[in-house]
Image 1 (cartoon, chains in turn purple, brown):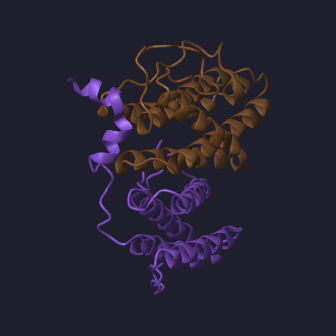
Image 2 (cartoon, chains in turn green, blue; image 1 turned 60 degrees about the horizontal axis):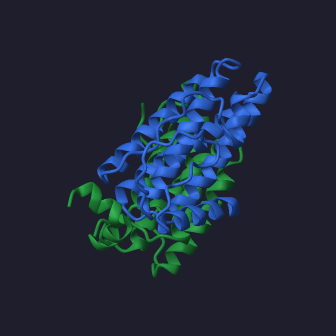
Amino acid sequence: MTRRALVAAGAGALLAGCGREEPAAEREADVLSRVLAIELALVEAHSALDGGEATEHRDHVTALERAIREAGGARAPRPAAVPSGDPTEAALELERRAMAACVDAFGRVSRGPRRATLAELLSADAAHAALLLDALGRDPLERAFADGRPA
Amino acid sequence: MSAALTRRAALAGAAAAGLALAAPAGAAETPRRKTPVPPGEPSVLHALIGRENAAAAAYRAAAAVDPRLARLAEHEADHARALNSQLAALGLNGPLPPRDASGLRGEAGRLARAGRPADALAAAAALERALLDAYADALGGLRVANIVRTAATVMGSHAQHLAVLERVW
C-alpha cells in the first residue's frame, strides 16, 4: 500500500497512533511559565510607553497565571529582563520573544483551553509588534509569518 | 467563533462519512481531487488552505482599488504554500487556488467586489477577523506539533494584518 493510500485510509488514526504529537517531556506549567516571564517584562516595558498595551499584557499575565495553576504549577517565574536602550525598541524585542515563546508552546501544550490562551496572547503580541514597527518608521508587515524572527 | 465551530463540525462530519471535502466559505469551486480528504489534521489543513487561496485572490482583485493590498495577497499566498507543505508531508495535495476572484463568496467575495478604498479596507478587516477565528478554532484541535506551530505563525500574521488595516492604514 502506498503512503498516499495509507494516509487516505485514515490519517487521523495514524497520526494519533504514531506518536507524531510532541512528547510531553516538559511540564506544561514550565512551558507556560517561560511565556509568563516575558509577559511580565512586557508589562514593565509598555508602562514606559504611551498606549494601552500594558493593560493588555496585565490581562495576559492573569490568564497565564491561571493556566499555570490549573496545570499544577505554583511558583511565579522571575520576569525576563527588559532590554536596555530605546523603550520602543525594547518593547519590540520583548514582543518578538513573546511571539517565539508562544509559537514554541503551541507544540507543547495540550489541546483546548491552554491553546486558546496562547492564541489570544500570540495574536495580541503579533499585533503589538506590527504597531511598534510602524512607530519606529519600519515596515509593520515585515514578514508573512509571526514567529518572532525579525526581517 | 460559533460559526467556525459549526464549520469544523461540518467538515469533520463530511470527512468521516467519506465525502469529498466541501470548499470552505469564500472559496470558488475548483475541484481537484476525487479521493476524500480524511478526517483530522488533513481536513483542517485543506480547509485553511482553501481560505488562504480565497483571501489571496480577493486581495489581488482589491489591489486595483488600493494597491497596498497587493502586499497582503503575497502574504496569503505564502501562508497557503506553507500549509500546502505540511499537507504534502502527509502525502496529500491541497485545493488549487481559484482561477480568479469572480466566484469568491463571503468575506473574500465582499473584499474582491469592493469599489472604493474605504470599502476595501473595511472588507479586508472583516476578512482578517474571520481568518483569525478560523485559525483560533483550528488550533484548538490540531495535534502534530509542526503543523500546530505553522498554523500559529499564520494566525499571528493575520493579527498583524488586522492591526495594520485598522490602526495604520
